[in-house]
Image (cartoon, rainbow, N blue to C red; front, side):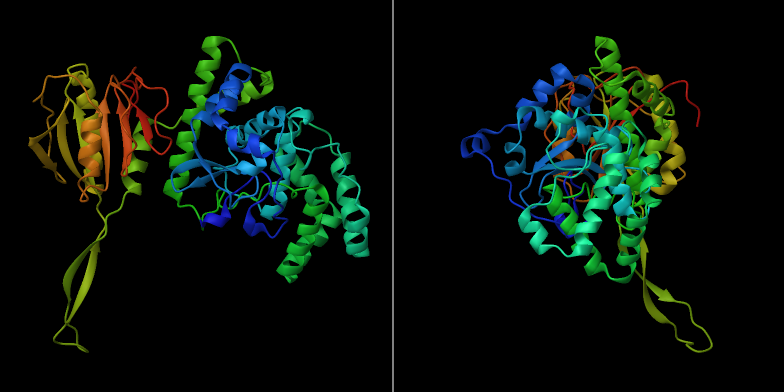
Length: 459
């Protein structure tokens, strides 16, 4: 997806709607610190705060407001400084809750409903009805709330058709009850004659449809709602990426749920939502499945010269090219002694069945990478893990090694997690955690994959 196709809480620049510049106090704009609001959110809404903290947050002035989006196998939150600084403290809090709920309700990983612009409205209606309206920006879609009246300037500029469309959609939104599902709002929107007419217009004349959508957005102050380009769209997001992100979202929700249960503090998350979340995370993807997805995603394309077999039409044959798509994945095994032999055997046993899909280069490490005893795990070979080191653990060692060797497509670190956080990696990185253990640091990079092994699971 391109930079201008981010899903946003207002709309993306590509959506053809109003790109107004939000006005904020220069001092507040300069001093605005999103982390400060995350700390405040953690006190009031620890569940939502844990969700947002797990995302990569990117400040970007090419989007109008803020939004979450899947980019490859990573989940990111984009935000515009002018927009965020123009809000009250309560409204910033509401925007953060709004973005967290997009993940909780799996809007980033579900296959996108069509027409997607109607689904965008439906998801925002469902989410905004769960947040106190005084904590939301003045614009946007809120069930039970009509649009602001058209200004005299808008009445002069708009055609009678524009005015009629505005009034009918406004009345429709005002008639909706709160606390319904995205699917419920989607169905009701599709049943509306004005929405049906807009969809017909979109099919016949995309430019005219975008202009109509723009005027609806202008009238509400800053757009109708999220554009969410790339959410579950198989044309923009590969199936491997979608599955990886789905597993990551479930893991984020599981950790946030465990923390909320441990502290007995769910904030304002209603009991019905808590029950739904527990149902979602109870269907956790087995660690073997996530491992397969990680390996299957990483492809390496090696160009090989071949010779096309001769035929009656071409008795001499022709030179050709074939490609080898087996990825080269490095495995760094923690040798600190805290990873038991049973975990090594469990992990290596699963990799044995996956070796046909990849070439594994195995390294042992403690505070340094043991290059002397590295070996290539080739298809069909049996590997018995061994111990060659006995020091402490430093995750920076395998991180530096992988980043400095371009032949490595991705890497996994098998560990019990007991060491400080390393720097971010330029390569795709997965943490394979010994059963029952966690990473010692609470904020791993959001682009990393965390795979927690369980002894009781079967292949």
